[in-house]
Image 1 (cartoon, rainbow, N blue to C red):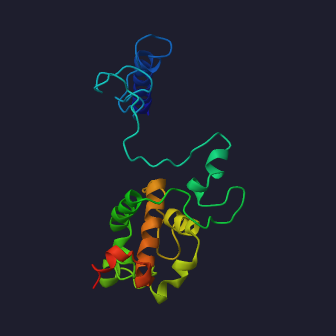
Image 2: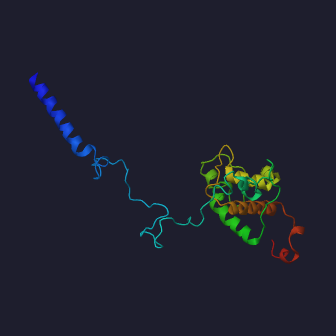
Image 3: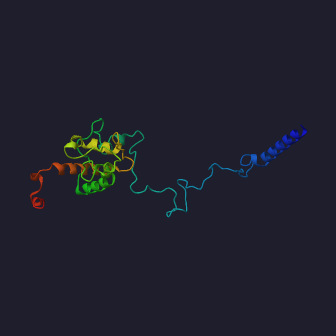
Length: 217
């Protein structure tokens, strides 16, 4: 029994010694505490709004990377964000989708839409929007909604704002939303390009400018 008390006394003495040396460091003493595991309390990182030699301009706070997609635009009540048809695809103050694209449709916008469509939409919807992309061909998706032709009538008759909404938020059961990865202007560019694909599928010869008809086969 006396050995037990001796061991216990020795352990208590050791604990008190360790506490006396290290336990109050950083609190009662100016010396920093002794840490075996710091649990990432202190890290080498860039603090905002302070000089830092790591960056070329000497600042820790840097501008957003080009192409960063904004998720919120407006005041603290989100008024500007919710009140803009360009940002939501909705008629301001309502839950109705805008009928037509609220940005100017230009050749540059269509070129941008084709580029973005080929990156984000083509794998599923196909190059011409018929729903026969690579994901369907390899069996990753059994059903992909077509955007053109008789089978794609639903995609043709819905408002432009709804197409924008589907691109942004996705559509069950298979399509994910792209609001976090495709900029707002680029989403509208894709809408414009999808409309061009649909128009090309249903266009008549009379709608082609006379100067361009001779190039058609």
